[in-house]
Length: 220
Ligand code: AMP
Image (cartoon, rainbow, N blue to C red; front, side, top):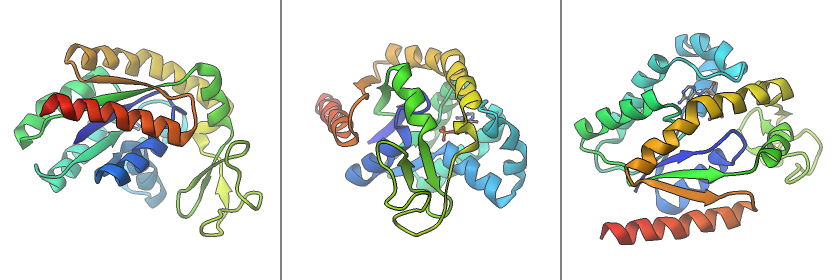
C-alpha cells in the first residue's frame, strides 16, 4: 500500500507510521525526521529549515519538493511507503498529485488521526526523545525506567524545541490554517480514512489496520 498519514502535532503520526511500516512492510518517509536530521548534520537544507522547524512553523514548500521526489524515485514504482508529515498543505498535496503519476505511483489512502485538542497539548508537552536513537517517551504515559535516560541505548533524553508550550500553540495554529484544508482535498478524491486516535497505541493501530483491510477489499 501507499499511504499518507495526516493529523495534528501530537496525534501519534510518527508512532503509528513506524508501527504500520513494520506491519505492512512499508518504507517510512517522515519529512520531520528528514529535517531534524538535516539540522543535526548542519547541511544546507538544515541551515535553511532550522528557524521554521524550531519555531513550530512550516518550512517553505520548495525545500521539501526535491528531497521528497528524490526519496520516492529511490524507492521506485514497486515499493510501498507511508508518508508521515507530507503533504502538509494544499500546495504540497497538489505537488504530490502531479508528481506521483509520472513515477507510475498512486496513493491508496490518506489516513487522518483525530485527537481532541486537550489530549494533544498533554501528549506534546510531556514528550521526550532520545538524543541518540530517537526513541520517544512520555513523562506520564510511557516514562523511561531511569529519569532522563533512554532505556534502549542509555543516552540522554531531550525535549524537542518545538514541543515547548509557546511553540505548541504555533504548531496547532499552523495545522488549522494550512493542513486542515488538505483533508477536504483527500475526502473529495475518496481517499480519506478518518481514525479516532485518542486511545492506546495498540488500539489505534488496530483501528487503522481494520480500516486498511476495508480499503484493500475495495481495491480487489
Ligand atoms: P513533525 O515531526 O512531522 O511534527 O515535523 C516537525 C517540523 O518539521 C514541522 O513543525 C515543520 O516545521 C517541519 N515540517 C515537517 N514536514 C513538513 C512539511 N511537509 N512542510 C513544511 N514543513 C514541514
